[in-house]
Image (tube, rainbow, N blue to C red; front, side, top):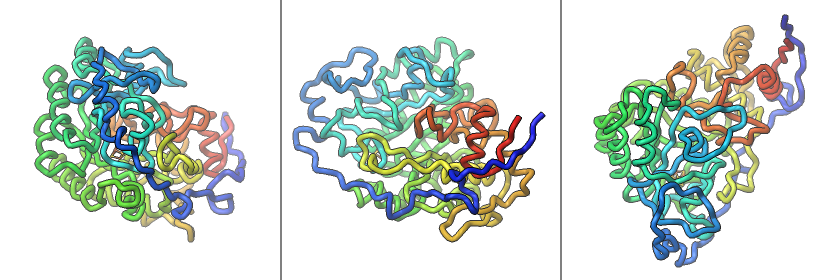
Length: 419
Ligand code: SF4
């Protein structure tokens, strides 16, 4: 039998508790240093021209082979373990449900986003294929081998979805098409649907249409920043990076037109200086357009221009996670919520019993992303420990258990259920 006990601790975030946030002033990225000429544009890798031999596991102590999409793609550690390409086990996860593929080139991504481990400024210290991204290494694998393994046993594939992540590179539009075609030639995209994590800076509406015509299922735009000012300082002029807020929105609206309702979305990183009201207003705007938001908790990626800054406090993150779930899946509108003078959620706009029910189900605290085969509000893209260490999980890559939910309730500052 369970009972509800009042057990509110100071880490919580509701009124009267200690409300922690990552504010705008504090979340200022470093300015990128200049890269020596000999390290620019993947020159080390191209000069050495070491031919690749099958799978390449990132290793900063060896000469990185010269690998290039569409023949090669990189994939997350979780995907490589699930595919059987590398050994390993994941804390409390058997496998990942999303095969995330990342385009790869010796020149790497030509953008310089401040929070990102793949950013251009890193070419001084680390070759592209050796860079950490969302906290993990990304092994490089021949695309043909990826398709061979999945096609061998399509029926029993653990993957509910495949995702092609573009980067900012002159070849990435054409190579995304090539990777998609290589996949759909042998794997039915209705059995394992494909998402595109786009790079709007190099794309036009015709590119969006082409990807749809070739069988892509969902198109996402990594806005990442929740406001134009944060976008500009983390992805635009502020860090000598080429991205523009307006261009990202153009592609997002093209995706809405071309892919249709529930088939487009935007990535947003929470805790880069926006208020909770700002990010949740954006979440509402996306829902009103017919799309979804996929949230990431800011984590100071090692080697990035924001690696000196604090991860998003768990109370801020949990409030936004919960409120976003209510907007996306429970029909609550941001106008029904109340915010305090600092823009923090003070009331979720739902009767306490209903709120308790949703918190208790735990789905709101799982990783958000494109859906898998279980249910619409459970993401195939579970990104195990992509935005936190396993010791202090931000996005749960599995269904949170009883003790996880007790911790989440403490972080939210709501009564802890003892069972
Ligand atoms: S465009 Fe994407 S991959 Fe490139 S630096 Fe920005 S966030 Fe990273």
